[in-house]
Image (cartoon, rainbow, N blue to C red; front, top):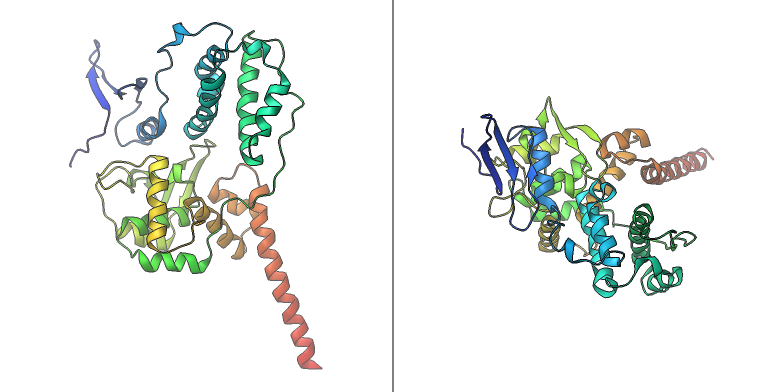
Length: 344
């Protein structure tokens, strides 16, 4: 069996003769990798580290002034609350706080007034303001818990309301147009099949590999929610997998044969959609929504759909079932009216 090289994985025997493996990437914190290469335990830890391990936070920590915004942010990054966040959430929250630190890092966090936060949020779009408020609130709650300040100035600030349909849900015509451009056997077609027939997020699809296939199902541990799922392999997905043989540990890899990062996959898939001349709104997440729509139109309940998609709550899933029920009832109503007309 060919041994597949994993980037940044280092092995050594400790003084007890036990083989240990670590993820070591220049400028990043070393992470111990449990289990053996190819196992679910090992590959989950490896993919999480590869997808967005935060830089070593201890560098420069001693040069921060106690009590400043800078010191509070550095401390928050090291906190359990931050480290328990999903890698993508960590990345997004870090992006917000780093921009804030660059502009106000030398200010005393104990003197940060509520009016300052309100003004900062007022300069954002409603959608952006919601993300900023969540990040600020987490930081300031940490500051209170560590004694940097005595109160949380985000209390009483309401999250802005805005109407959004969210990601565009792919139509059947758009799916057919993509498939016509990317036939079976291509990476692009396999990506669509994995997204559409597992109803998972891109962060979970890029970690899937043949080692996760057991008894006709794919085992998934969702990166965002931590939920563990067993998703039966759809016949169309089986065709795509059979047409795309690979010795890699993940079904989807870059042209260099390496696993995708979440952002890298998103950029690549966007190009695949552009090649198929699809609208700009078509995205990987839109296929997750299309999968839920299809299940609802097939008559699946919200609980049945959530068993596949892994949604933490039924609120989002119920939108699909309600829309499908509306269409079904409307057709039944017209059919009943037509029968009455024919009889008359």
